Length: 91
Image (cartoon, rainbow, N blue to C red; front, side):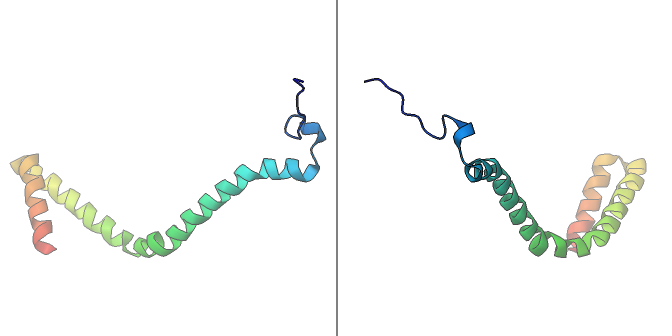
């Protein structure tokens, strides 16, 4: 009465090669879909934004240089506040 029902999952050696292949490649397919979605977003959102990277680096660099120069004479709190004030004014 209490006999075990034997299935393919209980004996992997009895599964067909196609069933074993599908089971092995399932997680790989999921990772592939996630990577494909990431690159789709990268293509449409991040790559166009990279055009502005040199501008951001130049602006950010000069802002840090200005903060450093003002901090020498007036303290870092004033320097950060003053540079942020100029940034808001220019925006």
